[in-house]
Image (cartoon, rainbow, N blue to C red):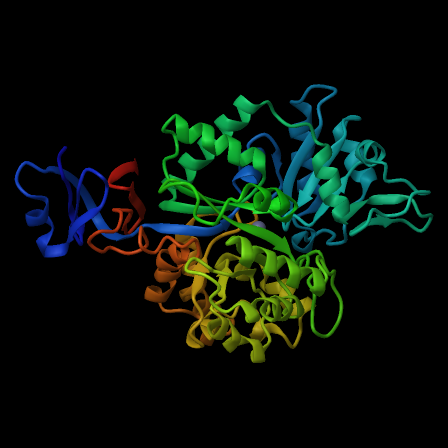
Length: 489
Ligand SMILES: [Zn+2]
């Protein structure tokens, strides 16, 4: 069993056969000792970067779906669907995601089923909007889902309708989730292979740990990959609220698992999204995903069961409700790390409450870049309270950064830029920018802390795992997890 020392990078880092760091900087070679293996990595070695919020299942599924992200017109979106559909079997379902009508320069109105009918050749099509909260369906898919003129909207969902009451093609929230569940699933082995490919891609982007918000199906795929030694990076799995009863019945606690695959918390939705106009705002509007009484009960059950909560809250009213629900629990037990996911709009009065209650702000810097125009349009007067990581950091909140991929790119280097220099460069409330050091911390130590892993990873310290992201002027040179190079340029 030999030690390894990563040389040629700044700082140099030595680690033992278990992947634990033996020394950093000047003392690294000495700490590794004679006969140690040398691995040359030219560049700057950072504590491994992580992503506190993404969707591995959705990323895996998007490998077999049409990608509409970045389409600047509805004509282009339709052209991409047409091309994709032409390559599919006549009875296949068409799935896809990434459309974003707010960006369409030819016509930013929500699209219709008839437009989609014209390019899908009779195949049912379900296309998820960029934010995941709405879907665009054609007539075949609307019919298969049972969305009809004479049938009321499903509870918690909205079916957009034309003046005659016929579904017009866009469905929201619970109706969108229902439509997405109708798309037939790929077989297990194909799905597992897709997940493996996604994890390799994430390693290439410099990520050493990701927290995923996903289903039991994804968890099974991750376990299969782990058994086969095919998890290149660390994965923290958070499960949907629907599974909470089962988790409590089983007695599983946050932190169960090992250094590579870890069970963490339950994800609960307090509201919708900015783009779908379903964020819950203090001045009115939005959708309430979970009423306050139920939320308080959910948090109490989780605290008793020693399970963490990841509370999705976008609008300032939802963020306030999350803080209200979490506040009584303070520091419930050693690994209690309550998190608010997104926290895109935080009322000034609520900013200090994060630190006061030990609530982590799990934010996605690239969302600010994507959403800027929309925020100015939909939240006038609330712009300086939006994506306010600078204010939260100054108030002492722990930040854990991520991407919400595939909503935005999982590349942490893009996120770091969005959190730091982009705000100054674009002149968009530059006082909310973070320093580069603070942004790096939110992508490493913050991500580790948000899953109770700060004694395992997140910093370059003797005794912690040797997780490195090595950079040079043109990007990621290498990704190291537990002392093993999992990707290099
Ligand atoms: Zn998400």
